[in-house]
Image 1 (spheres, chains in turn blue, yellow):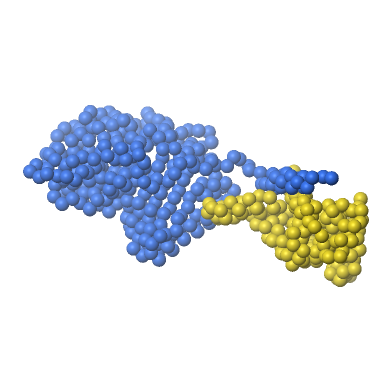
Image 2: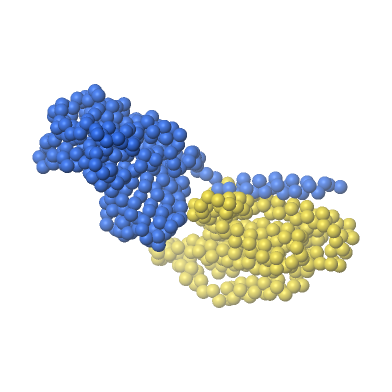
Length: 349
Length: 277
């Protein structure tokens, strides 16, 4: 008599065979799922980096206890509402940075800005630590001891301000250009703004004079290779256009905090907060729906790459006054997208 | 061999049922209606004129077989989905009737193995499905062939696909009946398999719309093994209307559908062998 378990064994084998036979063959290997976790907090290395950047402002006649990150203090000066920081040094040493450098290397010999800066004694790939951008200007931190300030700003020294500050007014180099105000703080911080008042506010904030400005970003928020805070209005302006999406974004989102991790694959977290929970919930659902529609449309149009990449994006439902958008891109997919500037044969595919 | 005897018994039982009698009468009536009332003189006339004048009289006419492709496409879909729906309803109580008290004891006292009883029931229902599908599609081909002179065997081949698809659904119904002797549950299982088969057809699109989690994993697992009935229906339609079709893909799909049905039958046999009556 035949053992009964043979029927189950046969069923198992047949189910596997059925699954193998009816599966839709993949035209190409699927995009690998991004590795790593979303940037949500300071990792140990980032905590070390953050702590090493904190300084104690030296204010004559007063005992100061608060510590600050000069770059973040400079970004907060003048009541900036939006600011984004790019960790140039960390990004340069990441796989994504390697890809971007390959792109830049392809441009060598065409008189690019990198070469010009290198001639002035600043190697952006070696001397620049961070670049921060706000609506008031650009702040660059790093090691500028070898910088040729005369070549860069037109004069080796500026008007002294505070303990270590110097303010230099740079006249426009072209017709119709506006004057630029360069603020140096020692040999480690350079701000390019548009007013001397703003320059003084920056130096006051960095050196801890007067009332501290409302912080744009706390040191605990300095995780990822790119991070920042953007107001809804600035985000809408950056994205451009005046369509329904833009106005909906401005209505629902008062602030978007962004963190991008590029240590291996690229992971982006955007935490959107707003005053109106209902509108924020609608925005989250709309974004989720738009992602799903885009995926379906890409799939229907045969653009499997885009469909799979969109599959790595998701919108977490809003909890009270915030919602979260997470986007992950496998490094291989980024490399394929950057193929056009790296001069590979399959560019654009 | 004894399984075929059981299948023959089932066919005799089906012949005595009003459902199948009604289906046979309805199909015959429909074919007779088509035969006597279809006005295909336009096609006939165009062909005759071409023969008479040695060249096409009108340049916007189509060959009869090309003009009839949409008809064959629609009829193949009617046979496929209509056959599935009718089969699920009409065949739901064959297995519960087989397992009914009194009858099953009698059957088990005969020199028939248990798995042969199941196989015979399955083969009988499959023969019914094949007969119905081939009768409907073959009749349509015959009617249109007589009217237009355009003969094609592909609609009949497409009807065979419909029968194979129903076989995979009925295997699930049979397996459920062996567990719970209920015609309603058997029909419910069949309907669920049809719905799952439809979902499996659009598996990738639906998976794209789902967030990661247990639900998505369950859906992915279920639809990975259930035959995508929509793809089978599309293939049946393409065959019937002489549309291009990748033969390798169709063979794989058919083999997968047969393997799925066999797996469900094996599960049913395992349960049937263990069960006390």
